[in-house]
Length: 129
Image (cartoon, rainbow, N blue to C red; front, top):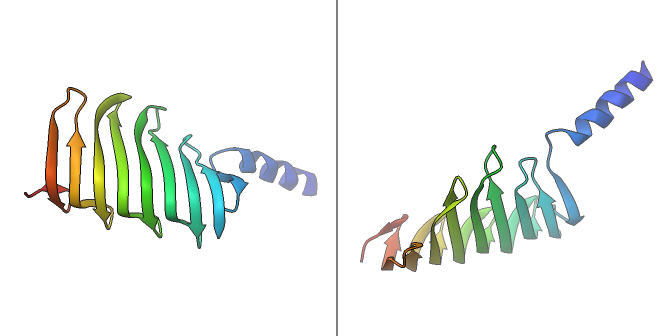
C-alpha cells in the first residue's frame, strides 16, 4: 500500500503542476516554470512577483500569447513596463509605458506590426489623450 501511494505522488508531482526551477520563488529572486510552459522570472514576495520581472506566456495549445518586462507589485503590473501581445503566435502589437493595477495607465505608446502607433495618456487600458 505504501508503495502504491509513493508511486501515485511521484507521478502526480510530474504532471500538471508548475514549479520553481531556479532560486527562491517565495521570497527572493527566482524563475518559475508553469505547467503550460509559461515562465515567470524576477523578484518574489509571498509567492507573488514583486519588483522587476519578466514573463512569457503561452496558451493551452502552446502558442505564444504575450510577454511582459517591467514592474509588478504583488503579481500585478504597476509602474513602467513593456507588454507584447500575440494571437495564435501572430504579433498583435507592443505597449510601452506606465501601468497601474494591471492596466495601461499614464503615458504610453501602442505599436502595431505595420508601424501604426497610438501614443498619449492611457486610463484603464484606453487611450484618452
